[in-house]
Length: 321
Length: 180
Image 1 (tube, rainbow over the protein chains, first blue to last red):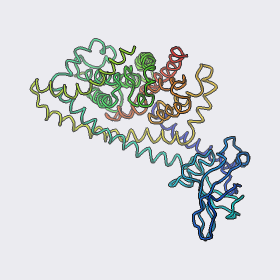
Image 2: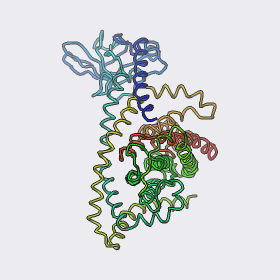
Image 3: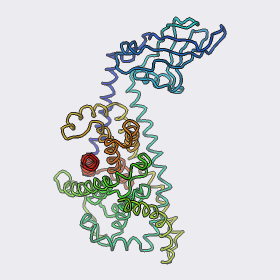
Image 4: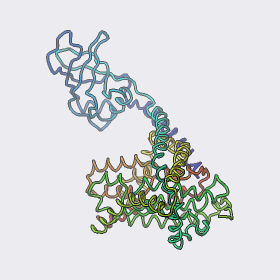
């Protein structure tokens, strides 16, 4: 399943990227090489040896829309600067100015570092007036975007994984103590009657159940940082029971399903940060929704494990615990 | 409601310190060599983090490409009329597609919608409930199965996604029912 989804994501990105780019080329979305008419007034009288001339750029919204064939319109004026040297004049819009598409894409593609829309200016008199600006050519936006997304995400993945080391070490150390001192065993004894039916292939009294309980509890309380190491520890315990080390057992899938849909008594920290006090109203809604999805997750993990497609792949369980 | 919430909130604040102090304390009472055992266990942390890397790279780069290619927007456009039949407001669709794939991406959607519609709007309540009720399924699969080198995930993806889809629809109807 994951094989198909994974390959599908990659192939679809290539196909869609190509369709978008060819479409851009065919309709000349960025009007590559064409001059755009603007009205540029200097903010102060210009002397002959000024190299940087602060200016106000006026743009005719209707002209913009018909030139690019879009419905969005830019602000009527922008601050900017003209850089003058031997080669001529270059108009630069103010950094981070709010500009509509397709200008936003042109800026992102051609002035990545400074984030100012820029292009050579023709036919401008220092007294001010109409002139035309030509932006650099923009091509294959999506192709470039998917390549750079692949590289940055690969880096991000390593950052994320390595960022876990500290928390993982902390919790795995604590859990080692908990195991040796018998805490996990007590947890197992207490929760066994409820959880065993969901994880029938875990032998009675096995520490895996204790880890699962701790993981699910941490999840319920919105402690994402603690839940992940606990879940990983639970997976490790389940893996000791697994004979085919490459294939997930029913219990592993059950744990995973319960994790992706666990009841949230306390919403995740990130959501609280985003929503502020409004979160108060949503807690009840989130509890109901996660309650429903937990039931569905358990049911679908149980039922799917019995379907022909997935059952035939079930690994044998080792008999000794 | 307020009271229950504040009790749960307070409890969740105390859970972490209680565990972090409680485990070693109890271990000490049981005459466990707590420091040595802690270090012994903590050694595993690095190993696990490194083991996860290939799984996480595989999942995240594919999702990153998919997002960057514009395929996501295309899917949203394609599914819009279909899901409209089931009473799904078109504004929440990007969230439904994004949520199982990326955590940061879907958080950005919540933020964007707050800016657009305001925290009070029912649409924001819907996406926030979706965000709070579901997990980044593919990330969880990569991390949990990656940590123990499970490559054949069997029915984990369908089971997780079914739960996600149900949660998304449930979020829409529950929010409509509570606030609509």
